[in-house]
Image 1 (spheres, helix red, strand yellow):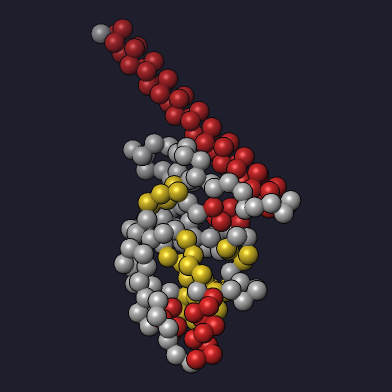
Image 2 (tube, rainbow, N blue to C red; image 1 turned 45 degrees about the vertical axis):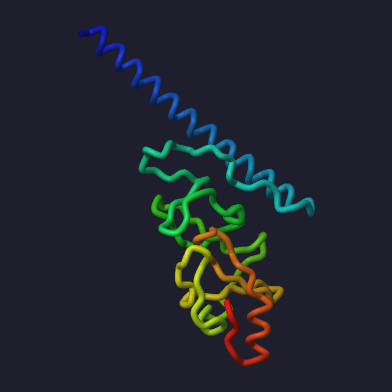
Length: 172
């Protein structure tokens, strides 16, 4: 009986050490990706590598967040790569802030418009009603709507410009 208890304790300790190392490796990978993308952006290169490294910090049986994957009612999967440049306070079911406050590093601000003002009724890729959502704007007058079901912004610049000049809603 004592041998079995000692064996079980050894297994528990090994599992705890393994889980801790897995978490540390995933954090190191995520930090490396952030540094790489930041260096790439500063050098004028492309936006870099996606934060979806495929490595979860903790397994799916944990109640803790993963930092590389998100879970919402409309989307489960890799976090949007633009979160490395900042996020809004929108959080998923694990408490991870997942909605970028930028597109490709260009900060977003409230345009003062709602989706329903430009499009009437508008639905996301998986059926979520987007009509009440804000339309976000960059400093260079581009307009975006967050569709959480695809974990990305939809560029609606042309539709907003057309609607402003024609004084009427356009089709989503």
